[in-house]
Structures are given as C-alpha cells and as structure tokens.
Length: 124
Image (cartoon, rainbow, N blue to C red; front, side, top):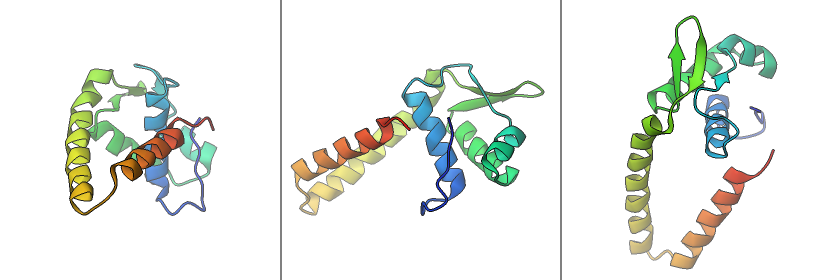
C-alpha cells in the first residue's frame, strides 16, 4: 500500500502524501475508505509518527482526506479535492506557458507528461 524509499531525495512525508494521492487517483483507495492511523502507519513503516501526521495534515488541507474524531482518517469525496485540481491546472498552464516562452519544445513537454503519467500510474 504505502511505502517509502529512504534513498529518495524527497522528504518521507512527501513520499507518503504522494503515495496516498496516487492510490486515490488509481482507484485503489475510494471515497470513505479508512486510512491506517498515524500510529499504525508509523509502526508499519518504522518512522516517526510526526512524519505521518505532517503528511496527513497536508492531505487534509488539500481536501484528499478527512478526519472523524475517535473514528479515524478517511478518503474524501472527490468533489472536495476538486478545488485543488483546478488550482493545479492553473499552475500547470502558467508553468507550461513559461516553458514554451523560453523555447521548450511542445513535443518534449508532451513526452515529459507521458513519463510522469507512467510513473504515477505504475503498479508498485
């Protein structure tokens, strides 16, 4: 389910966050599925609970998950994360325009998007 690579240059909380988002996007985690508790995941991955808490806090602020006190952490309905998607698309358009303005080839950008898509959708 969720894994971390200690040789990866990205912080562990970012890896956890990206793992959860990838599982949501690929349909492995669906609306109202329960995530492991901070303590459970910390023990499973053998990392500090504060690291898990940081990843969960960011996921919650971006609308991917919600917390029910005393019950656990769950996957949000897709509509709640939708606002974040619109912000990301706007940022994507802005960055793409800057790259094109600076001479980046459209084909190279498409190839980069394809490579990212394969990475995000790969089966671990």
